[in-house]
Image (cartoon, rainbow, N blue to C red; front, side):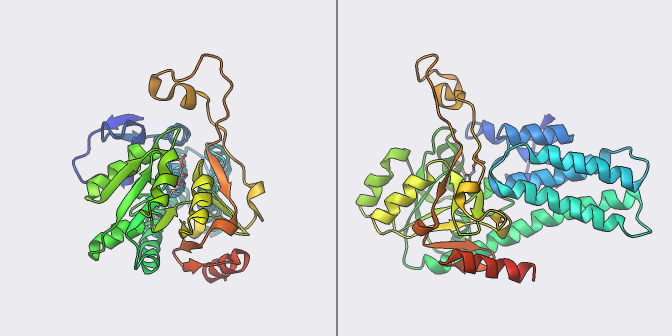
Length: 359
Ligand code: MRU
């Protein structure tokens, strides 16, 4: 992969003149720097090392990775190309385990390739083009889904001003607008203003490095707090609603999201503040009936004991560093997708929304 400079308005991921560009989110907020991902291995590394992160964004980049793999293949026939793509799918899907958008996206790319290859007239060139178009479609659909979530969430936030969010579920985590932050983006267009409290989000600081950065750039009234300040802010009646994203939503509505989300949900429940989850249907995994079955990524202890290079704990200390936790559906006031506002029982409402998409 190589660094490039980009002159235009910032973006998370873009296919430009046959090249896959992403913002290197590890450099934020110090620098807006971009890299070109040239191979499937680059895509895997970019996802694994959090250069690109956030469930929808890693799905989109992985889809482009499949298109790259196809376009760089020297397979002699379409069957051979499909075999290579299966390996590419399994490889890139293993980059991170929790966000289901990753496997959802590469499985969709694979299914598209297999369907297209069934046509007698299918050629390798055709399959390569089909996969570029499919990745572009996944990215466009994500933008549409985020926009729709923004509209649906705004209908719930009519009387709200103070919002609290955890992690980054903004434009940096999607194609555009974000999931949890979509009503902020869409609201600005409609003249609706919010004051957003942003949890710092230990240990990798997606809140302070990413959410605070993008909301400040947008001109939003934003206040950064440490994770352990959320209770105080809620007790002072400064928060009318909590909105978070999701990495995987089980069939019963249990939600895996960035570590710390569960604590925020419990606090919101205590203070009787609505707790909303925003996610596209590509984040809903009906194959998983409840949150206990969601695989939780464990990350390096270095993120906790020497995050950003400075030792903040004694050498050799034992560390537990799960990247996500699961919020039980009972603490979730609504799950907002591109299809609308799902309420309890989620085992019914989510299925109904999924049926509308895949009747
Ligand atoms: O480890 P990350 O930064 O990929 O975790 C991201 C989150 O937990 C987000 O809240 C989630 O993916 C929703 S993004 C729209």
